[in-house]
Image (cartoon, rainbow, N blue to C red; front, top):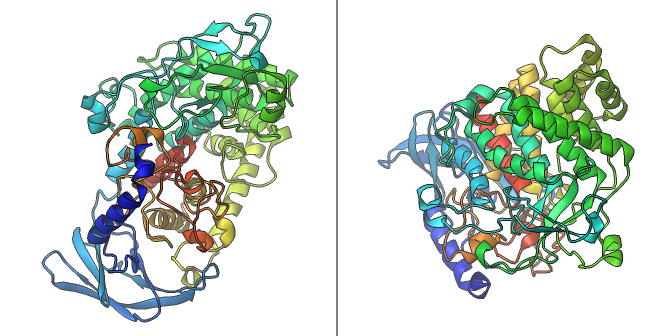
Length: 579
């Protein structure tokens, strides 16, 4: 709880540091908004200046020499806040270097580099290493964020809701490895399977890029792509969450969230709870996907066969139990101990059936799975989220090569839906938007996790559509979403820890809070502006796109989560691979 007590001082200090690095004015207001991490030399470089008093800006090189004077490109009024903002195009600057953008009395640094997003791309993947359970993080790989092992999970109890004939209540099982889900210390099948699915979908799209990308994790010396090594840590855990009958436990959890303490200090008993349809189908889908991904892998021999067998039995259990949904309140009315951690409760399994049946068809070629995929196919493309995973099935089928003729009508339908979505997103007149972005132009764009589930996944859909069509508008709009996420937005925050001149210092993240390190674990995407304010904190009367607090208790706007990190991995690495 150390940082809660010092939050006011720390917030003031972080603002002062950000001001010196990112060019805030003396009142602490961000005047010039831009991508704080960096632009590629041939990339569009739009910056936004608050207010309507500036008609031109200048850019100086590292020697103070003026290299560009840019006239105002557009002047807009935000439909969310009513604020006036001017946009300026600095794209003529193509030489690598450090620049200063000057607007009146205000100035900010701008980086142009051929490696602009490389460090961020790697850090997004490395963030999962920091979320690993059941192993010590050594200084060799974790640096100052090293920590002892916690939550070995080799003595996990079967909760009464999860009891079966072969595993009665109080049975002890081993369920080790996996990732901590978010700011808490529990492990959830629904969310971790979705997170893997999102990352592995991008791996399938640009495999050569990932095969050549080295991440500083313990497995980096083997022959497997490091992204696949990291995902294997969670896959090993997922195997342990399947019961003998094929059903899959919804989550591994303590009855209540732990305090803001380190993993080694946690003492609550841990349980696996109720088998559910959605968890079982998400499990089936990612197992079937991994059966293809790890086929013939010398470092993980036998995983492919084990995974497809697990996927088959899980899918059959789900077919026999199509509507067993997780209702935590009802469960707590029947069983002890009561469980009050994240629910991931989803009352519709049609999208999970679609994702799982597509993956099983692609891995087995069996028509029965294709028939189910056609039955459950979405009528329109829906951006991916843990609560609607149909897009993962779309990504799998549209990217599949050498399909049998029987599957091509489904593939073409899903391609049309995805491209229709990309076209609708790209139809926005950018010169009428506040931040020259297809995202963030309505109060409806801001809610719990919007940085990922709004901005990020929109960009991912555009990248998949770009690979299908070679329409560069889709790629450019995905890159504009990156610019928005990294600082060209209403708050002026680069929303990834450890990057940019003004980034979150106090995420709702137990590891970052309790480790005694001032800086948070790097490479984590925070949730973002959320007018829902479910944490009950005082946000004041901020407009929707500014409703964000860089405070540890602000779980509604400042928590981290592996599904949001997976979005960052897919979006940033996809852009780096396709730029």
